Image (cartoon, rainbow over the protein chains, first blue to last red):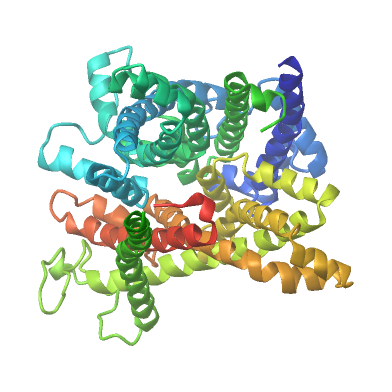
Length: 316
Length: 290
């Protein structure tokens, strides 16, 4: 196990370096000079030259990359030239909102997808199974922003049950916080459950044909106990896999959902930085999201190894 | 004994035929919708439609009428005409971007799967870096720096598709390269180029094409999402995503302004998914989909 972790860690380092390099290159090689953007209307040739010198923009690119990377490793990702807030402050302020949203979304998606998968697998080929499989396939073609609009129309405009936009911190008023979170989390869950349900369903259909299930039936165990305990357990690896694969899409969905529902999370910080051309914030957020994504995938990889010894030993 | 065999035969024969017919109807409806969308998008300039950009402030959010079949939007522009012209943008970006991915990713994947060795490790490694970013984040960051235009958008979405196409092509090539007909061609002294183009390509192209259709669906959705946020196609042009984003503002007075383009996008994405998934099930019997 230690050897496996060490090998994966060794692989993590070059990927993280590449992520930082790509983020830096996107931000520095593409057209538009940062100094002009910062100075805006007050850009005179002298001002621009002075600012470029201050920010080190007149240095060669490899030197700029190394000094930027050095600062990043010391925890200095720069500060917004609009609000004066550092990137880390801005991200730390908004991260809890995004994480709460993603957790609620993933939990709701599991709450919808897992029971449906179990029921469908138990009666595979039956009318309910065919109906749900078709529905799940159709739902895969509904983009997040479409279901968001549909939900807003239904629950906020027509029924007036829930607020369409707004946010209250959880610490201030948990009930109000959850009320604001229902529609955004449900929107993301609607995009996530079909994938969970489809994969888990086919996984469980295969499991239900195993000999030990037949043995459990022969022993006279209750049907529900066989389904939920004996058959679901080996599929836990599948659930970890799907969750891991979905994280990238979930982060993308969070950006859209936070913008639509006006939630002050990382996604809205990113979009806001794009609208106001706040390049330092943009660069910092992209780097942190990219690095966070790589590390989460690394943890998911480790989880596989814990759950399935075959992967640890390089057989799978 | 004889009767038992007979019933089994009937059962076996009846099962796939019934299934084929059930799948078939949806499959052909999806093909029909795709042909209809393409025809409308290509013929848009010659169809007897009002201009999609002409505003009529007296006719704002007009209901359905003979003059405006699907009414007008918040600026008095003809909704049907905007839908048709929006289809052009969504389809052009949705088709061109995956073509970039198909060509570059397909070529890299075939070369990696055929030559193996260090080249393969480099290709797979560099693709892993591209996959290290959540795709929408990378697309947003690059459009923000490059500037908004249809060309940039297509280019970025195309590059983002390369790793996936590479994986499909490499996986198919890896299994094919061990087959007898390839070994026979090598034994006959065929050049690498000939084996790649004449022996492997015809076999790799089918799974790649099935994947291409699924990629079109994904690209239309991502383009829609970017345009919805106002970061996709630049303003005077409007794609379905732009229209849905504008329709959101008047959800309480005229919900159809959001739901009409939404329905068009949903049906198109669903069609590409259906056809792509059916073709994938055909080309890859192990992953019977649907």
